[in-house]
Image 1 (cartoon, rainbow, N blue to C red):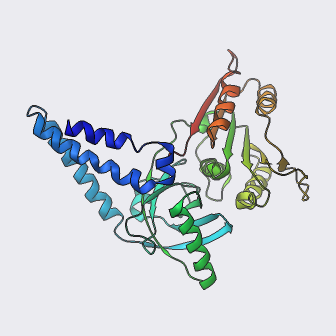
Image 2 (image 1 turned 180 degrees about the vertical axis):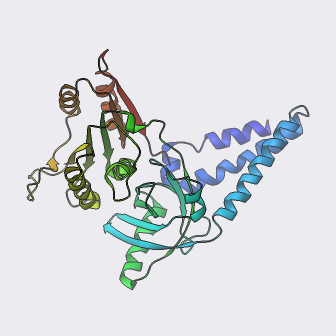
Length: 332
């Protein structure tokens, strides 16, 4: 019964609200699994060898992670490109680079020891695997991230960098984008960071040199206001310029939708559009233009946006054209 109560305690804190607004409660409550192991060990003698083995592996993993994160690194970049978002960049761990741990679409747990020694939060990596640094973008969505944004503003005023500890990277994308003729990478808000990592791996200064069969890439970013879109705008312009200058790279179409803007982009470069994207029209244009090419659709952002694009992509699968859909969600 005690072991069951521990499991129920963990389950009670796995809601969206707890993960996003009460992260520390969500995080520390999950250590009730220790009580589950103890009570289960006392309850069933036959299962003790398996429980002891699992506990040993867990303890070894925690020790390795403590050693991995023991030494903090000073940031190279720590500032707020927008009032609600912080850009953080620090040098890669030489060992992780040697082990080839860095891939596209990953995340890292980051700790700011000058704010707290125990607060670790996961953030998507927006840099490319071959970059010499790890970069994340942190949006103020909760108490801790708001403190990070405020602290970055303070450091910028004082002209100093800060210390970070990182655990990772973790995760991977379960597809090889190089095998598709057409790619469509869609992100909503800060959820565009995994797509940005993919774009940098294709068009960035230290892009991958692996063989590919890509012909065209669509990059679609959805933001509320044009003032917030400056977060990645310069990077997207640089990537598009590279695509136009390098004939061996796939063509790149960039569309930035500002949902709360009514006036057209004064720069007139065609990248920034007003309103919401019409995924039906976008998918129709792409499938008709590249009727015989396989297509990868990758989305990360609000659930409603992801589900809408999911329906549009999968409904267009035919015997002559394969369209695969993949998505990432921010569950913390």
